[in-house]
Each structure stands twice: as structure tokens, then as C-alpha cells.
Length: 372
Image 1 (cartoon, rainbow, N blue to C red):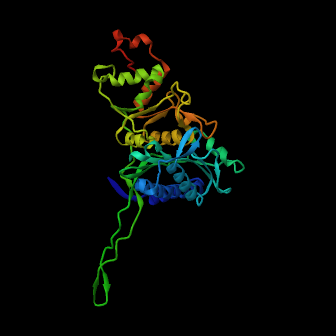
Image 2: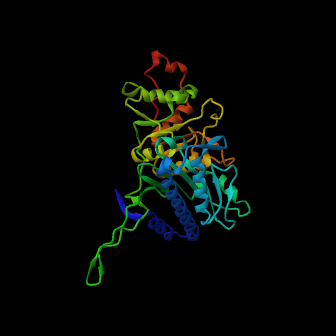
């Protein structure tokens, strides 16, 4: 259910509610979010066209150890174009090796994954855009703003391009969801013409994000988890035993049946967890390139963590709160566990006190870890 509040109205009300001299920075945040929303509209239209827009899944290169596809690069260009008119000094993008300098007088830094879930481009599965907004504290070195710990984010959000286009946003005080409304607006009355009445003019096309009624809250408990089970042989024992306990269902130590989900699109998994609870795990593992985790701390884990925490959930790297980590460089990788608070805490408990191998032997198969 949606209320009548558009994204623009919501942001203006938030900006006008600033106190103690914060109005100017809030106004800059508002302009930047609206620019990102505008970029999202353009990307959503491109995604909706699918192959009619060209070979969006064609590989165009590699950046920071990840394959770049045509849609990745197109989305990056759209974001940079829209942010050029906002008070943004620098952009840290997954698709650029180095920070992109924009406005030297800008007060903000934006960290962004322009197109999350690009492995799903050709399969008509939801993809999205993830962003983080930070304040620039040193005008002589605006890129340094991108390396602040996540708890210093001024705002964070993501867009999902799926059956609905949705914008999930936190301004540091709760998490809200806006859905894209593209219904044309028809005139209220017919038009008088001479001595009679003419047909009304055609409906006016619109495109605006409308808020879902009430802030969203992550369910405290869940019966759903998301992980790429094909990598089980590479996991640490703590992750294996956590998943084994879930898979044991009502006959196991958790005494309830779980469903497993894995979309391979971070925004899609995060959106599902916001709507109905769950826990997402992308742990470290023993493969080369995965030993520090795979997701990017600055423009993936940090914004998702802020969004989830502001919705009452939790986010860690398996043990440590994501928002307390200080990035060493723009493309730093991390493990990520987020979602329903009780589940995230259980995963951390498994890491803190890994079970003995004997605990998983058949004789002890029903013991597991019964931790709060």
C-alpha cells in the first residue's frame, strides 16, 4: 500500500526539518538523491528494453577483478551524467578504477555500484543500483571522503529494476520504500471548445517515485536464508555448520524448517529480506579472490548495512559490524551477512566459537549450536 507522498515531497520535508545549521548540507543531499533517482529512471528504461536496446550482456572488459558488461558501462555513464549537475565533488564507482572528480566545490561524495547483479542481465532477473552518500570534509582531498567508515554515511539507498522499479532509501532515520509510478495523469474535466465540448487532451506522462505507507522493518526472526550453496566445499566450518543446522529443519537443532533462496543479485535479495525477513550470507572462502570476501565494502556492503540497520536488522562481515569497518581503499572487499537480527547474531556466534568436528559426526548429528 502506498501513500500520497512522492520522493521529492519526502525529501523536501526532511530538508526543511533540519536544525542547528544542517539545512544546507541536507539540501545538497536532496539534490543528489533526486539526481540518482533520475539516473535510475533512465537505467530502468534501458533494462526494460532488454535485447531491444542492444547486447547489454556483452562483455566489454574487466575492472577491479570483475567482468564489465555493456549495461554496467552504460549505467555508469548515466550516473556520472546525472551527478554532474549535483553538488558532488567525487564519485567512487565499481566501474572506474579511480575516483571520478566532478565539482571541486561539491560538498558530497557518492560511492556507487551502477548496475548490481549484472550476471542476470540476459535472464530477465532483477538487477539494480546501490549508492552511498558521504560528506566531504577535506576540500583538498575529496576522494578521502569515500574511505570513511559506514556509520558516517549521510544517506544510502538502492534501486531494484524488476517487475516493479523500487527505490529503497534511508536518510539515517528509518528505511522507506518508494515505487515508481508511471501511470499517465488524465485531465479532470473535458475542455470547452466554442459552443460545445471537445475531448480532453491526452493523458500527461508521469514518472515519479511514490512512498509505500510507513517505514519498513526487517522481521526479527526468520525461516529463510540466502547463500550460494555450490560453494559449500570452500566454506569455513562455522558457515558449514550454520547451514547444516538450517537444512536439518524441524528434526535438527533449530527445530524449524528453512527455505533457501539465492538470486545472485544483492539488491533483489536485500529487497526480499526487507519485505519478509531472512538472512543473506556471502562469506569468505578458500578460493583465490574470495579469502577477504567478494562484495565491495564502500559501495555495496556499507549502503546495504545502513539500510538494513535502519530497518531494525543487522549486518556484519560474519563477526564485526559492517558500519564500524574503515575501508583501506575504494574497491576493498568484505564478507557480508545481513538480515534478521537474531540470525545474524547466530552466525557471529558460530564464528566466535566454532563447533568441534566431533559435534558434526553422525553420533552427535542432532546437537548443533543452540545459541541465542
